[in-house]
Image 1 (cartoon, rainbow, N blue to C red):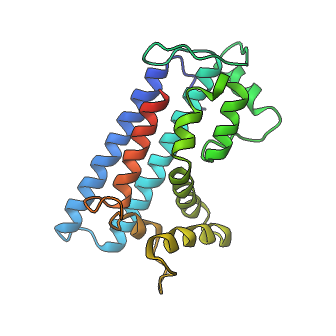
Image 2 (image 1 turned 60 degrees about the vertical axis):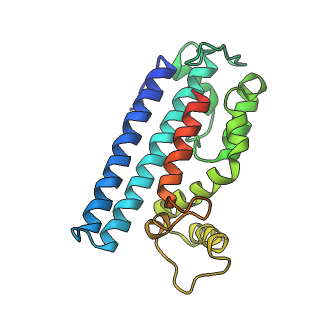
Image 3 (image 1 turned 45 degrees about the vertical axis):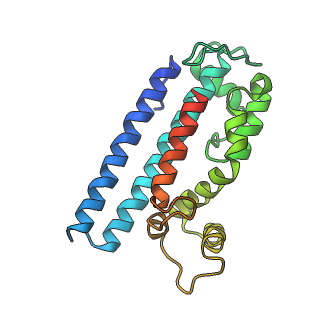
Length: 208
């Protein structure tokens, strides 16, 4: 069962702890690969797992802080948040948002933006960071979906990312793990997984 949160800071601290653990795991994998204790295939598989788990931790964070903000919980800096809902408690707030839906989508940037506009005054503090980072978050969602579903539809989304990176369709489609290990075109000192970590951590700071 999902946790019942009381404070924004608790959700943020849990997220930070989990992300730091995943970053350390990635660093260990890199060391083991350089020492020939991991094959490329193993490295790519573990990288996909790290990415997927980090994405899930971030989904948990946005779910937690969003529902707390609908209860008008203060931000970690003490700033007040205005909600259009008047829930009794955490799970009541989640039920009101969920309504007749089977589940709540927390991985689609457009959905989160729309939801923030609907339930929080001026979408604050969720809307702005999501709007600014919509493109990057959408790209990572496509990677997440391809790992989770490996369907024709998810492959199409993944190939769009590959075309953007290579400028054309690669002769051989890499795995998501292999793509995540490719050098970033924005920062040649980092591979894509590290950029992903940076974005998640930056988003977490901006919404807490």
